[in-house]
Figure 1 (cartoon, rainbow, N blue to C red):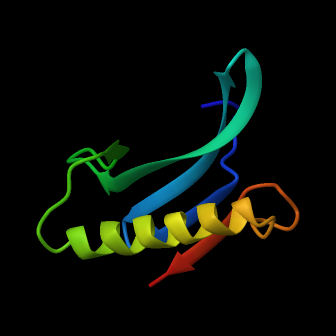
Figure 2: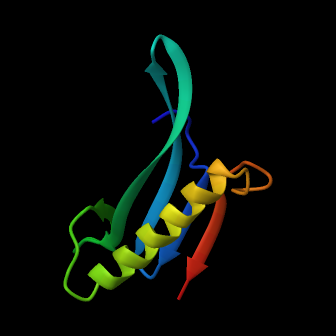
Figure 3: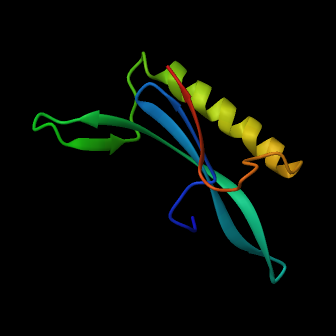
Amino acid sequence: MTGNKPLKKISAGPVSAALWENEIKVNGQAKTVLKASIQRRFKDRDGTWKSTTSFSRNEIPLAIYCLEKAFEAMLGEENGEVAENGTGEEEVVM
């Protein structure tokens, strides 16, 4: 994944998905594709923020929601509709 900032971020409670532009080579030509990452943020016992990619039963619907929205954004990107400003657009639910 390239760049420091995601193209788009979707959050639902402690769960978030991010869309990243990724350069790949196809038949020797560079091509940009979108990749999605998903994580859950939480505070540990010391109050320090941490991230994980594991989800409890109640967090799975939030992860599904974020991934569905990420997929919709990927389809929109194929049609030139994602992040009009092209920089780190964020969608938050809850």
